[in-house]
Length: 179
Image 1 (cartoon, helix red, strand yellow):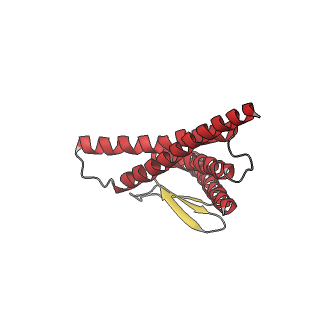
Image 2 (cartoon, one colour):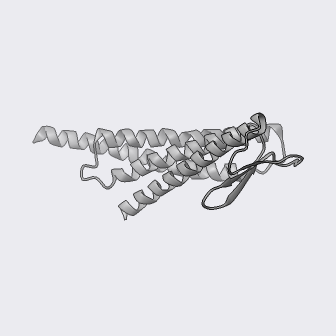
Image 3 (cartoon, helix red, strand yellow):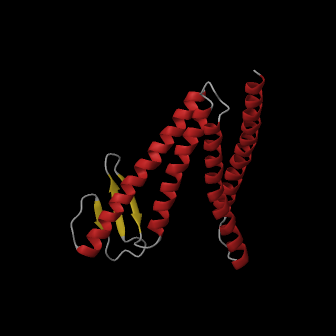
């Protein structure tokens, strides 16, 4: 079961990384087509459309992705890149439990990296909720609240694992000294 969960996290890593690579490359191609006039494959620049400026067709699955030429694409790149890294470290987190020697400094280091990485979306979403409440905008912040809840729960669980691993390493070192 441990290996299945690790493989699922690895699959999520590959999915997010593949999406990041496709969207990154194809959005760069759409930028080149719009501003330099090159005719790029899988890209259509939409003229006269108020909602979207570019349309990307992702090969092999024929998914259509439309977006504006603005900073929103940069945030999408950062979001996909972050969650690619996040699921990579999640894969490492689950692989810790498949090893024979569970309590070692390398495993503790991986747990701390995953814990710190988990704090980033938590802090960003808290700032978004605070900003929205201070501006008193009637925006929907349910997604941010869900992300705060999910990353908060994961953070608490990983923090408890870190504490258990620290105590396990300490007990293992004391045991090695008595032998």
